[in-house]
Image (tube, rainbow, N blue to C red; front, side, top):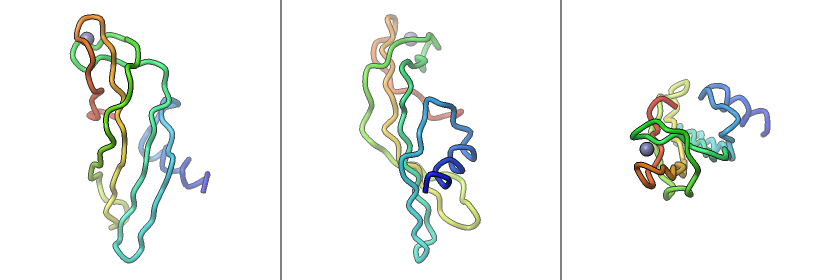
Length: 97
Ligand SMILES: [Zn+2]
């Protein structure tokens, strides 16, 4: 299973700030659900792009990703929230990940 998680991390282009915590394959439903966890110590403010501290994590959400070999691909993530001195607390953007 660790190899599958590592493989998924490479496919998503994740850096060391992210861990793939679970990969659930549902053959009958033709669905793969990848669960990701942010383990980095800091964040980048989505409004002013300043490097800042990590406040906490937003509630867990799911996104549909591009299909993988005709399997519906779902991402489950609790996105980190930045703690910016200028912009206050903001949920880090998922775009560009
Ligand atoms: Zn900011």
